[in-house]
Amino acid sequence: MRIAILLISLSSLALVSTAHAVENLSTAELASHCAHFPDDPGGADGIFCVRYVQGFIDGAVATDERVTNNVAAEIEREESFSERAIRTRLGPRLQRFPSYFAEFCLGEPVPLAEVVGHVVDTLAETAGDPRPEFAREAVYQILREHYPCESDDA
Image (cartoon, rainbow, N blue to C red):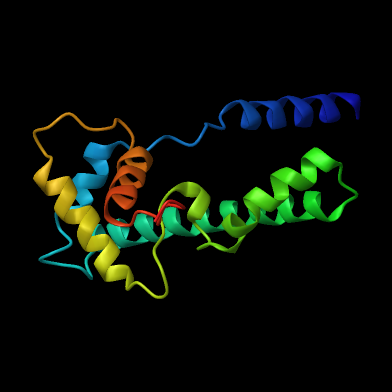
């Protein structure tokens, strides 16, 4: 019986050791998928491109909403004079677009096809130029360029 338990334990360890970390998608890989979007948006590559951009945006919104909620929760607890001074200066920033802290603001509503179009066009236009290694950095840069947030100075 002990041998059976030992064998089961060893086999489960072998399964655990074969697990791999999630690989980062390169900008070149994303560009190769997105290159198919204009001609075949419903094809596998076009859908991959759209879903990647949509997932990136959803992740940024979810993260920013969590950050905003955490900041609001901190504000609601008993605060010191200096904390209250910070809150009064931060206050208007809490009423922003959900992706404000990610430094891009899509507004209400922006069609996903428009956003994907900017990503596709920019990736195609910068094909020979130096660009970020990972797709997440490239998409982030593109969103910040095409959908900047209004500054407080305006």
